[in-house]
Length: 153
Image 1: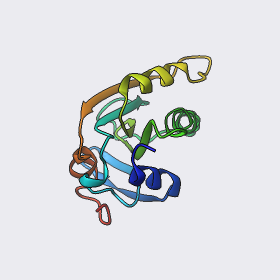
Image 2: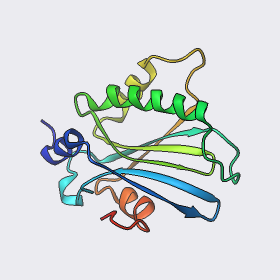
Image 3: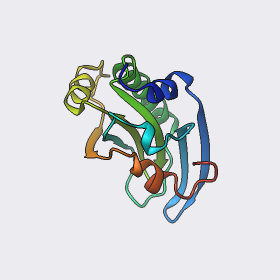
Image 4: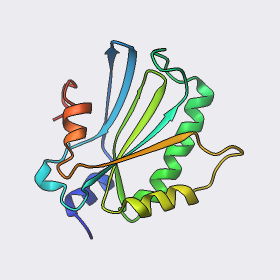
């Protein structure tokens, strides 16, 4: 097992929901708890953000039912592809201003991309964009996503 704390986080599967209002409109945030301390994230040094744009930026739009359903199917598939053997851990899902963002941490970006490309698709390929950066202490999760959420730490 690569990291016992990450394994416990994923298998416990405890989520917190936060909703609020940002400058561009409403947001919905789901994140796994407990939020791990940087000393507990060893080995999962890369943040993989997957973004699905469903409306124009600055529209403040939340997804319509059809988009929500398609994104739920995608989330189930990507979690199955990445979390089954703890290649990656989904730690947060943020929906706001025309986009949904899934935040994973992983130890092998290339294998994550390979598995995402091999996932079952719908008639059209999923309209996703991937972004990866090094973040060994998961500071993006804490400082960019959870900083203003009560109970996020």
